[in-house]
Image (tube, rainbow, N blue to C red; front, side, top):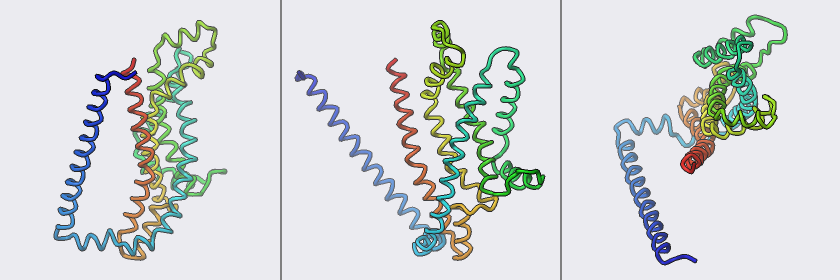
Length: 276
């Protein structure tokens, strides 16, 4: 049974929500109009519009860029899966305790320090051009595979640190309770620690996934015909920069759903922490 006082509170909250929505819409409209007037009123706007926002060039280049984007998506899915597995293993090595595990901890720490500090563009050149030059048996020459290897090496270092932060955030009493129930160290990690750790770091993982979506376009520096490379080819044909804008917008459209999901996960985590 809803009391009169509770109905008044709900009505007040609804009126505040409608007012906030109206103010947000008005302020957004004012900002959009001001930005449009400022940009289109600039002296160089006609030339910029012709060079970067040509609708005819955009439509003509769209099929080739979409075909290149399909390659980016495949690289993203494969690299994302490999990164999660390797990063979890390195994070587990970094959290091992005891002097007997010291060499493994040093190796894992050295890996993270090296590939987290090395710029991705330099690693792409080293792996893409330096590795095939060694002429070792079994080393692939496909630029897509080599670019994927460079992405995996770099992002595994970042994601491993995210996993490690989640693992170390689990309170020691949780581990002690699991061990007192007779669980082995491996089962304690798999059944008690990892589920809590992954849930806590999910927003950070999704942010790294968004960054990986963008950086998949860097494999074009090795010659792979992805969306960025396709845009470069179309730009050379049309003597117009609009294909780059088209490729950029497609990457933005690709990243927006993941970014909003990451925001939702972050808000959910905050509510959980506030409810404790």
